[in-house]
Image (cartoon, rainbow, N blue to C red; front, side):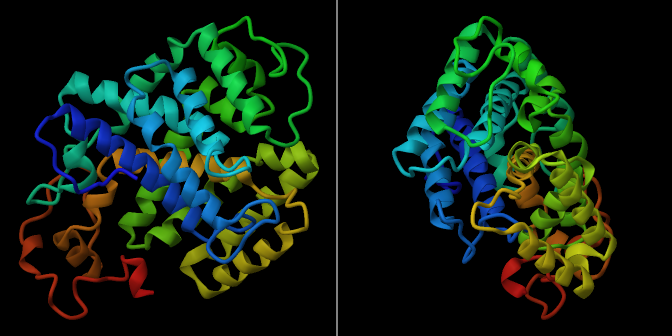
Length: 366
């Protein structure tokens, strides 16, 4: 896996390396959080384990590093092929479909604005602010990437889907993945948007990712939640907002609606922020598990990974980990918006002061 902390003498290499590292880190953070109904450490499925998700995150590094140099469809196909060399299960098709255009957009926008993803991902400024990619700029670049997709992109994505062989696809009346496409990738995604959450993201310029997921994650991290808890809360927020289409394909729309209602009920109990909410999460997890895992909200997990990637590209890893910001959290003070300077005096608290700079923000403190 590409290292986040390895310096490079050239500017172009760190850009590709750090966007790729952010994508891989997003996959690892998503997989490691104990989301109800999903694989996580110590909670495996019959057909794949948590370790398969780790291997998948490592495998996509090479293809995503070249996302700016090739069309989206080719990156998706290469990433799925690379994953297949490490695991026999479909572990990340949805994630790859979401991260490939995001990575291309991030690299192209970085080059256009001369911003520096190396600094955004790992090096906060002295005042704790960041020069990471803004959500507005990233989404604008993403829209251009999606609009420029071609029939060849659709052909490569169809090949990748057939290679990954996800369950419950069925047959479509037009532009079925078993056939050769005659429309652009964006056009075929629009055709499937009413029944597939990943396709809906393409059709809406990633509305769930930018409109629901990334804001929920940003808010959770500002409130001092650990990455694990923040990811679980983001997952529940996305699931509460819309039924999971993976569940709908495998178990029907009624079950998918019931799972979304469970997520809303868990959040109403406080979610990860209360003892009652945590008990509700555990109970929800038990209800969603069976021998075939047909109620696994897999599409929502994919959307969660995309939201994490967006947050990392905006500097989310370093912004909430700087000593000054941890000190603010420890004092119960609100954090300023992304990219804004810290208030006067915020740097006066030293992270070595016992009980003041930790603030429960690191998962290791739980």
